[in-house]
Length: 511
Image 1 (tube, rainbow, N blue to C red):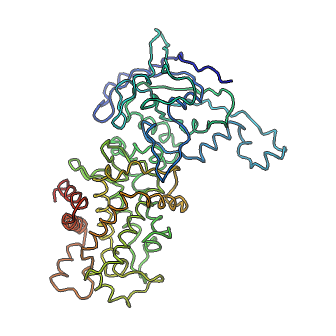
Image 2 (image 1 turned 90 degrees about the horizontal axis):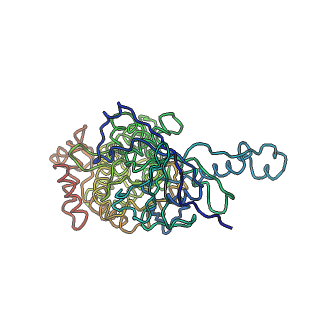
Image 3 (image 1 turned 30 degrees about the horizontal axis):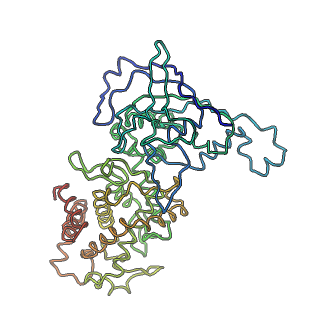
């Protein structure tokens, strides 16, 4: 028999405010409006908290995952929540024993209670709070009435009655910290009434929520800082971290992880074709790992181009109409780069442009263990240089960034968080990407436009003196900008969305 759900909760008011905090730069436009002077402390059944916050098992259909029920998109690490689930039921260390050892009966004395005394930190939405362009329904609001003194009464939505309750639009609660503890309470797994302590803010703006997550989890070094940017994607764009140290940790570490994935994954166009140790005298021409990392941090993992430039990195800046960070895992990010690279490589293999034919005539000079098209991977193509790699990363990022909404990038979300080196999860992400029809066609058209550029380097045979001289502009640090500019000018001539997107990027960059 199901218990009757509580409609009202008595909460303690906890006032935390100092005079020094009045000097804080509160800015509603930056999603940091002035918060209340206090928060609340109470207990609530785990099943009720899950229902009110929308924390539930999520599945993917057709490679897509929609997390509309979460005010701020967060990732679910299944292994982590399953580990917590076992701890709750069996305590430590019994929860870490194998199933065979638990069944043997020899370790029953290791059973312990699985207490979770640490509070779940949440935010209760206020009327009018917007999330992704929508607002919470009036009938789903949790109202808070001051009882005088140190207590308050929280009244749950009138229609709320069980763990199967669904809101009209948005759930009234956002989980700031503790979501995996809630995911551990999957339906049918944990019996009985298990209450959790809750610290609740009321109407806390989303930038303050990201700040809380950081100070709870990273400042005391409870979890790896790079991992935190996956668990809480909004952290990638917080300006206070930009001025501090966090973003450099994210960008540099992420760029290195992605470079290793592009080198190691068997389906990558750059499989075993990145000089990971910076060795000289290699038979095969390769771009160094350091150059790849610099290229990624300057393009797809960057924040904005500049204070007055609206072009950002797909993996480091808000995108789309709601300006939210893409909640892609490291495996998804690696898959996207591999997928885009495959499109360019395959287009070049089919390419009949004079520049490509010219490079193939010197095919006998190549010494690859696995024979590849010299137009893509040979010693005299810009595509196999630092400048060329950065060029295609710039263009792929620029055009996908300005068309993120149309390509529906924010809704391509896989079920699990996974690292870039997880080959199985990268394979699943690649399989899912192939089903994204809009992105598929867009990258096909982009690759078809890119192969019209003469990718021969200044060292290629058969160049006229004027053409060889014109290609010298791509050397040195100024070559990055010049190649990007020329590629965008070329793509402006393409028909349809590629041409208009390139024109939009050009205007934003002032080219």
